[in-house]
Length: 354
Image 1 (cartoon, rainbow, N blue to C red):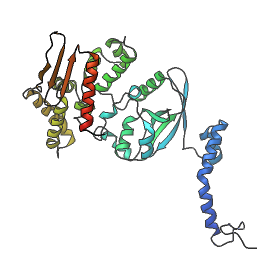
Image 2: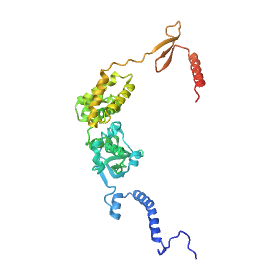
Image 3: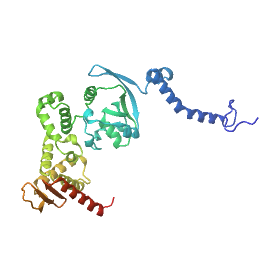
Image 4: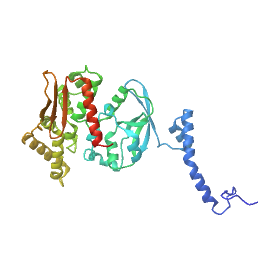
């Protein structure tokens, strides 16, 4: 009887049958692994212990059990993420982590370049709404993302963590790099948002620092983050630096967008080819020069009357600057206003098609 095509001889003596069996077995492994993981999880057994007992594996997915501030216990299992997983599956919540991600760049995490060879301490995270939320290790996360590096080690828990437990855990673990003044100020603002009754003295106790530092931190937190981002390493900014940024922000409050763009263009030329450690001084000098320059004139607004009325409370006027035109009406009947609005819409529709 003829053998069906593609059928592997059970005796294993067909030409090439050994290689075919290897390929077939290899193709089945991923599905078998998924089934095994699923069944272990359903059975309630510990994955690490199962792998150790049946396969002799001890170094993959080790689980640690930590007691939280509330007294509850949580289990953390180690995972290793590649660049794509790190980019798509992880997130950082400032209210929990306290590290402003917008201020992290390649220069500010350059002190972590040893991660090229080894990550000595895994990050710590929790599963939250389908994402891996990093509680500690956001700077390491940033380094791996900037360098498109694989192998980010992280201890992850699937146990539900209360908000305060998550915050306390993050605070206990974060000892590698002190938070900058802006971040401390933002943390204080977040606390006051949840509890408006919190005073600076109480915030100082919670952060284990002086009340004067809290006051400076709150002032730093009010600075436009785009000004802070002019510097390569926000963690190096002093109180005097934040005072300078605050003055620039206050002076150019009406034209800050334009001034930041102008400063960025100036710095692009001045910093070209200059070592990063020299950037801070050049940037500060540029900002000081910005303060000493002539105060920019506010764009003039011309107001003209569209119609005069007997009543002083009634008005119809137009305000025009070099950027915008607005029409203002006071004490005008609602049906008249509806007619005006309809006329404007009709004219716009006539000249601007969707």
